[in-house]
Length: 512
Image (cartoon, rainbow, N blue to C red):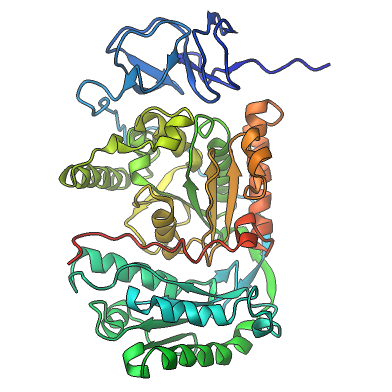
């Protein structure tokens, strides 16, 4: 009979805490100490007495400072650990490029993708309906709803290679300055979607009088109408009903060409993977995130690209990324975005430690320092090649960073606008998420979540916590699943129909 796994996980010999595998009762022995009181699963137990004001380490990195004396065996959480006296944590040693590695040994693998006429590679084949402004959202949805396989299956019955017609609407586009940072970000996002390889064709629908004028945006982006891109407004079409009918007619014209595709072998180096974590818990940095990081290392070795984002959720761990920066200017650009966020939160009356969320804290995460250290594990171990602003086109291959908010729909929207044709999303609490037109693969951090919510989770990384799988083995499982999904295998979120409502461009500036 196999022995039961230990009650706690020790992540590094120099750590001041261990992590509970399951709920611990007072009196439970753990790594040479006796647990004091109840400790929930995923939460921390002190391994030694810790003086008030002393740093506390997990992953052999500082996750906060004791806000009062902590006794060995005590539960370590928000009641006795915070960011430190100044709430800014600690000074980080950025050591640009200190941990650079040689390029990985090249590997080869393939998936069955769709090669567009211009050479771009798609993992899905949608027709998209974008809006320039919130005022045209209802029309866009009506067009897409007409082609819904759930409510009108006959509409696409003759086009089996078309994955669907989707409306990606948003809440802005007017009530804002017609020039400046906010408009630039919106237009950059719309451009990324309008030209995304996973769309066979795109309609753009506007109202007509909005601040985000379609003609101005398209001219600035260098876009022109053609076989794959059509644009019009409700006002110029004669109103709502006429605009809906016009859109339906255009889609019907586009469907035969969109369906005329075949999946062909494509090199894994064509994959661009967006990395996300949401509803994190104390296991995220132990199981799903490092397993995804192992998959990222494999993807990079195969010539692919992985995009780490969520800048507020690398705060406190950015020094681990600057040490991997391929060039000093790459690391400096990341730090410039960190400083922007510090100023941005300050002028909006917030602070970087507003995160973790209540759900994160219930799952065992105490400070943003702790959450960030687990979050950066998604990025694997290869060199950081580039840093991009929100929704910028990602040109580099390898491991890169894109500046985005931590809010998952906004962050992933920026990644997909940048070219991500796949998304991997880790969760410990059970986040519900999808991301059209790019499929989103959900990774669970713990087995109880898998047993409770398997209908939403694609892979159970909780086997690592259970001691039945290694990080490296799970990374290989994830990488192989990525190839399968890129080849057309449906993810759980796709089967549930997630992805249209989760298109959320980052809104900056005043609403006027």
